[in-house]
Length: 236
Image (cartoon, rainbow, N blue to C red):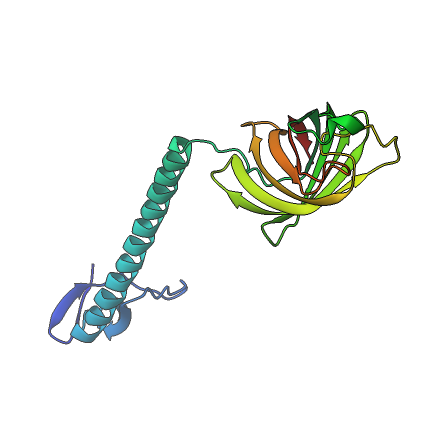
């Protein structure tokens, strides 16, 4: 092969290029020597510095990308393990519900007028307001005489399944004989209603219990009527 020089460095000539396409590669230049075109690699310090800097930055980007992917996978793995290790909690006992149970009168009025204690069934309903710890409640106490007891309660959660409340409202007597009494007496009156709701885990069932204090619940006896209620409700 022919020899050609470019500067002070000698290179092996690639031979005549007449009639053949000339391919120019990066970091190479064409030199002419002895009437023939020779290929010579250019290795200037400036080009070498630029190439090394670009390669270093590219390696750093690839390394950072791999580290980020590894950290993301590790975070997801630990998050999944932590989520699986946490105990499953049922929804807090804040849902609205309707239920049925029993009502038991604990007091009596003037027995001479037939104001005896009375017990029966209860139909209960609760509608929870979404943006405040307040519920609208109503109960129908069905006995010798039926009483409707609407109240508004302030709810206090104890845990994810249980809350207690205190409500205020009125007992409203439906038509009936004067001697017939309900669990909360035989006349309409102001009432206070403390109570508790407990949601059974992993279900829509609610156990409810409350007491009603009806002030001046008896017409003849002029004394308060007290009753307790309890039952099972279905959340909606």
